[in-house]
Amino acid sequence: MDALIYTVMSGADRTLRAQQVHANNIANLETAGFRADMQRSVSQQVQGFGYEARHATALQANTIDQKAGVLTATGRDLDVAVKGQGFLTVGLNGGEAYTREGSLEVDDRGALTVKGRPVLGDGGAIVLPPFEAIQIGEDGTISIRPEGETAMQQVDRLKLVKPAAADISKNVAGLIVPRSGVPLPADDTVVVVGGQLERSNVSAIDEMVSTMGLNRDFEVQMRLYKAADEMADAGNRLIRQ
Image 1 (cartoon, rainbow, N blue to C red):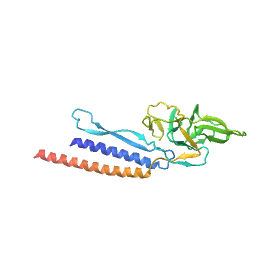
Image 2 (image 1 turned 90 degrees about the vertical axis):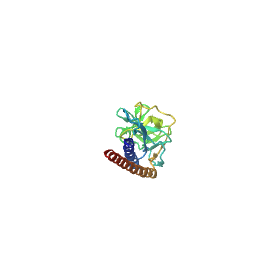
Image 3 (image 1 turned 180 degrees about the horizontal axis):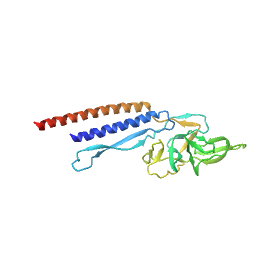
Image 4 (image 1 turned 45 degrees about the vertical axis):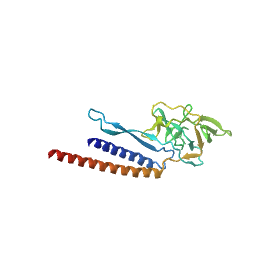
């Protein structure tokens, strides 16, 4: 009977955490380049003498849905979208993080940024000289036409990476980070498209269906909890008699 309580309590906790994951996905439905989270859990035996028959749900780090989002043309020269698998690289606390958000900006110093974070290239943070036009090639090369010039000149190249799904996770800021903590190597096979942005890969319908299913699961677990309580009460009455 108490084995059932362990199962019900951990199952209800997993359901609540899964609801939070899906709620966050829905909240980022319109966030460019957002990758949906998928909640993971496994059954685990409760440790300790006499608990061999008790099992609980062990939560694991969320995995990331690698499905590509829809590309939308913007016509803006500084917008870039990753075509297929891969990520752009940005600086984070002296290290690296990765993102599909490709709405690039140039600050007052000429530094290329995404949401205020420096965009990294072959030699570190990308800083551009004054320019009149800019182009981003499919391989991530950045070419500009300097002020007063007529020809385009290549000045840097975006660092593009393509990690395996099992090697990455999300941090609290929603950026992709390597599970090992070691910066990922550049991958020459990643292709980007200039003048476009990738929309979130979240499906509102799928998320709502999953949320409704989790609500039903939670209701079932609460009924099981009540049943366990009634069985415990019945057992106590038998002992008293």
